[in-house]
Length: 197
Image (cartoon, rainbow, N blue to C red; front, side, top):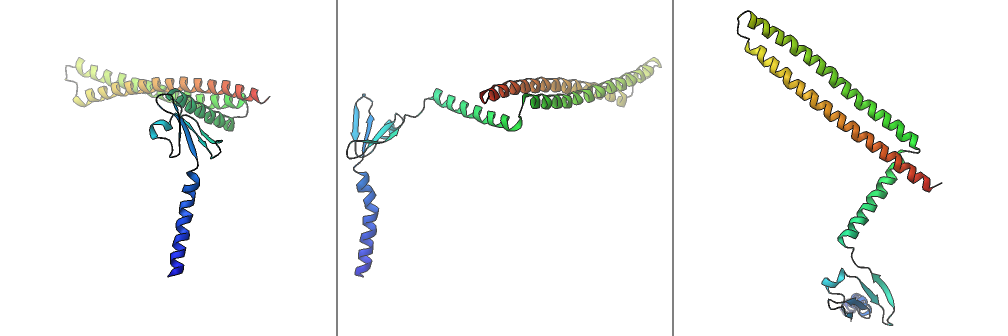
């Protein structure tokens, strides 16, 4: 029983010793009035973001906690990190500006293929619509009412044309964006490679 009490006492002292050692530290910060404050109990939460220093029992600074970045500084830090990450990825993807140009040509050719297919489909749909309208006109010249299914097909062809025109415009916008992106990548890669020369 005696040894159990002794073990508990030793454990308790072991737990308390860091607190005793830490208690000799001083925290130096500036309060809202601009006064420098020394405090053994730490820095109040409302002053932590302004930064502070930790001093040992001889008054020497052992740690400096810088102020938290402002919104603008944080934005710049995040932008710099994003730029560094983007640059690293660019250097992993391409070794030379010529690599970027080859990738650009491949991508633009792929998009041009989509545009070509959409234009071919649009031409085909226009031809089909012209045939359907010719049939409708034949009915009208013969004094017959144009069948409902024929009118529905004509409407469907018109809607399909609008969809294909919209697709072509979208592909053209994607092509322009891709082209600009590859040009920007090429310019940035040249800038990065020039730093290593």
